[in-house]
Image (cartoon, rainbow, N blue to C red; front, side, top):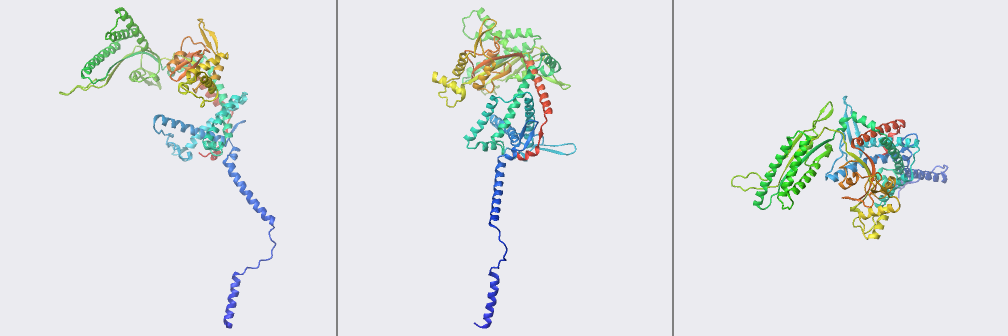
Length: 620
């Protein structure tokens, strides 16, 4: 290699060495090993803290430490408030879902003025419940979340005020209250397990992130205490309404309660049903026309009467005549005197059925539309509804159909089904308050659908299962009748049902109300053990026949036989509390007014502090 080449190569190597050779480290003091370890530990600790924060936050731990609403001695945390808001939302959705199922259509949950229907697939905060504009053009919007949150706030304010009053009154949750709450919590746990959820995971799914079973329990305890106090006060207000106050209230509000009337009405109905036989149809059509003419004549004759006595007498004669016509077409061996007596008896019974008392517009039935429109015809004077009917007013109503249309020349008659009705109505007196007597009753219902033909008790629970096992062991099959009988016999054998004597010397059986309530809550399949202030026509016939029998005595029970209805067998208990309907209505209205004023007062006495900024933790 020549000198020149060697020199170039040496320079190239020197350059290359400058680029790739490692630089000499300056001799400084190195980091101690313990410090590096400390940094790593610190980083890991921060990571653990972050993960812990995320987990605790998802479980609502921090929200649980935040108070959303409070009074002097009680508070509602954020998860408890989430439970309240979610419950308001779910109850509304559930109600409309039931409507949709009932009517076979998707019924939307409508918003307020200028708002949108609720969309269950979207966040409530993204949906407008209402949008209003004032005179200055300012727009006020409320979301669906605002709507449910405000409703929940009202309930919370009421609960907390009642809890404060309960505390002042020395009221606490008793054993049965805690058992009632436990039953609700157990149901949540069971449903969660059946559907593959952890309990708290299911609770959070139902009531919002971070809500656990403990939060539900805490809220239910407040609600139960508030409910007990509220029920106690409501009963006090109800029982505290005097007769004098009811009379004064009625006098000041006659137009509100004078909405009942007494009247007499009878409907004559002519019907025609064609057959395949043309000759039979022709004869039946003629008979139908004759009935139409006769019935039209009846109501015309009745509509010309001017007083109740004449209307009654004329209607009785007409009904008696109709009974004789029916029997004139039948072979019978009665003498003329016997036939006359029978027809007179039947006419008297039909006339009694034609008299209606204490009827309101709500009592209207199919086929009575025109009659009720006439009975309750009204106008408004100075903002007050005034009914137009006067005592002695009479009216006829006719709704006629032809058995066939007149045929064109050369065409055959085409017969078709037809019904014609003729109604005569007599207005007995002016509008008045409801004078029907109402009574309070208790019952324990065993449903036929549940028990009849049952041969195993595996799906039954609690005391009902114990009772059913006895019936099954004895009879080999279970029925609603046997269940009711077994319970009655048990109560009698235990001395809870005792024999008593009415004033007329007849025997009956009685039981203490608290005992009946205890057993009713254990066994009845109805949502209520007791019904207060029952009107005639409110319940099924057999139920009312027992309840409104004149011989009923307070604390009487149906022993040894339960009452059978279309639903099953009812062990009936007569509470008493017989009172005129108008008094019952006014007592309820006055006690409701008193209760409302009381709730407003205690909320003023126990103001609630709300921290609404914490709504940000409730995701709905």
